[in-house]
Image (tube, rainbow, N blue to C red; front, side, top):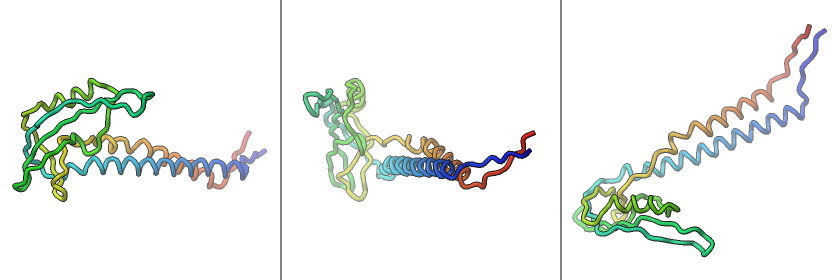
Amino acid sequence: MPTALRSSLPARWYLGSVGAFLVALGLAFTWWLWQAGERAMITRHWVPVSGTVLASGIKESQFSPNDSIKWQAEVEYRYLYEGVVYHGSKLRRIEGPSPHRAKAEAAAGAYPAGREVACFVNPARPSEAVLEHSSKAAFYTLWWPLLFAVGGAGMMGAALRRPGRRETG
């Protein structure tokens, strides 16, 4: 006697809705990671020039009395670009404080005063330079949110398929 396996319409709508949500969420996070990777790649197209570290140290900051203390490496350097002397203070294009003092000390310690360094200069705005490129890790993690998008697409496909029949014996 054949038994029909049929999904109810509300169950199929639910499955399709969850799938659509996962697709949207996966694609949104993929786009966000792609944008982060693109921002990390910007300085790799800048012009490398030699520079000299003038001073380095760490800065302590606290947003509010209830906030934890954070530290940030501070580096001042001088570089020459197309015959003009500029001064810079950025390690990376996007930077912020760290809750780990040792991390800030290590970053500042890598650039002692007097050290010759490579500065990456923005040719469109030569007053903007960095000493280090940002990580490309965002590009290496794109597969993770895409996995959710593919899984969500599979759920949507399953919800749209016409329910089949199965015979039991």
